Image (cartoon, rainbow, N blue to C red):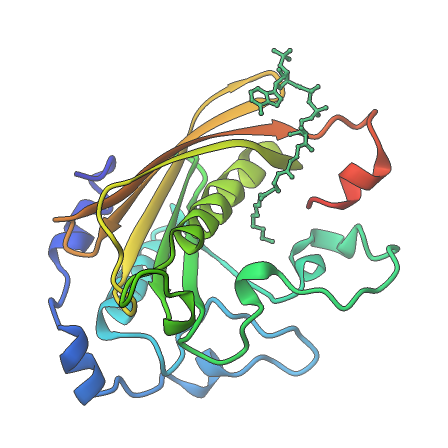
Length: 237
Ligand SMILES: CCCCCCCCCC(=O)SCCNC(=O)CCNC(=O)[C@H](O)C(C)(C)COP(=O)(O)OP(=O)(O)OC[C@H]1O[C@@H](n2cnc3c(N)ncnc32)[C@H](O)[C@@H]1OP(=O)(O)O
């Protein structure tokens, strides 16, 4: 079971719609506002697109409803890391043709489709993740490296919101059950404790119905030391 009662009912409330159903009856796109970036603003990728399955959309809607109660916030997602930084603090850096790893595949639905929600009071970030066909490892299943990536990013976002500039020092993952491509999983992370510059976190990756525990992870993030090199500081938000 998940740690918080807030998410438990979401899992049991899944539509249960199969991938085959989803392929036969594609979900229509949401409102134009949800699909298009606003003029002059970078595109926010953490919004529904036509590749999202019914399970993904149902969960998204339920989390979005919880944001209206004030405890949860949707985290926007851009393909350039600098766009995530308030006030563009690192804008002085030379411009580089870089992309956030998870947003490096432009086509919808084939790479990392995900949206994260933050619960500040619980020091928790939940990511709804739908791995696409370019993330394949064993036939039909997500590569373990892609699972590690989404875990690192979810836990990392949680650590950043709690502790500011941090980097992963250690990430330990137990893979229990393979994740089918095109399925939806919940990556549920939380801060367990903070000791000085060390932030300890844990994470579970579960199926939408809560019946399958795909992976568990623990991580140590270290707050960057302001007295250490500028290069290290600049490499992390
Ligand atoms: C925009 C959306 C963004 C989404 C989130 C993205 C998240 C992505 C996160 C990443 O993937 S970051 C990339 C992968 N990580 C790295 O490349 C980090 C490489 N390592 C480092 O740069 C440094 O080792 C590190 C900054 C982690 C620590 O170096 P420091 O010089 O600041 O730490 P220091 O050596 O002073 O150690 C501080 C404490 O942490 C402990 N420590 C450091 N590394 C440790 C380790 N690996 N295991 C256990 N303990 C460790 C160390 O023993 C010490 O404990 P004590 O204070 O008790 O003495």
